[in-house]
Image 1 (cartoon, one colour):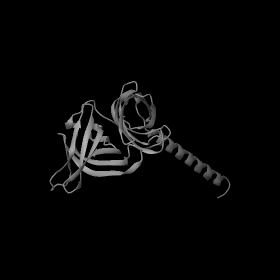
Image 2 (cartoon, helix red, strand yellow):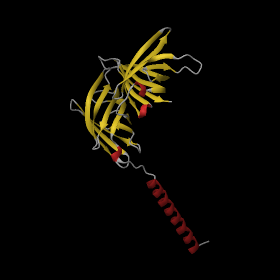
Image 3 (cartoon, rainbow, N blue to C red):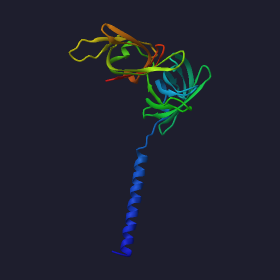
Image 4 (tube, rainbow, N blue to C red):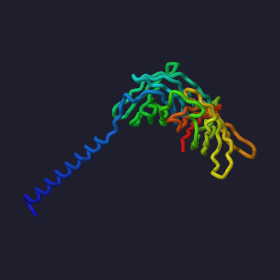
Length: 265
């Protein structure tokens, strides 16, 4: 086939691909994430981990906190950070700017006047944000989850996968001195006691205890076996989030920069 017949085939092919591209574009637009900025309000707990070079050489950082966001996007709360082997707590204020495309920026100022800036993506119901610090050298692994206005010991109940990871640090020099990694499964009984999930036919072994404050902050102690009849205690400050299904925290023992996460099984 030559001449006009070839031209008709070529024109039809071009039209087909143009229609195909237009359909794909329309489909992607139809399925693009859409969020309601007005839904981003209430109480949230957050965690930020990674490495920072802000204020000096690279070093690990672990942060946990709780903020309340009003209907105008103003936030206030408290943040506790560990990056020198010691935990520092600060009141924070700031602003949240959520967008209809589900992007969000946050600015926080602590009570010493320092500003920190963050950006991330919020899910459709504004209950979960994955974010990073956008200041040069800031930590990159942040998560913010909705919490409630009131909690008690019974708010932490069930079986949870436990992950605690980070570094040990010399508080005097700031030098990294080792790695920390804990994995396991614990049961919270709703009455301030933790036990290890040892299996259906095995006796429960004590794993520590916890206290839950009214603002949903948790003081948690993990008792880990290190030998025959010996245990080591790890102390954490944490926040109960996601309707009691998750806990975010940091270790508060001197010389540690360790993040904690409990996720309901």
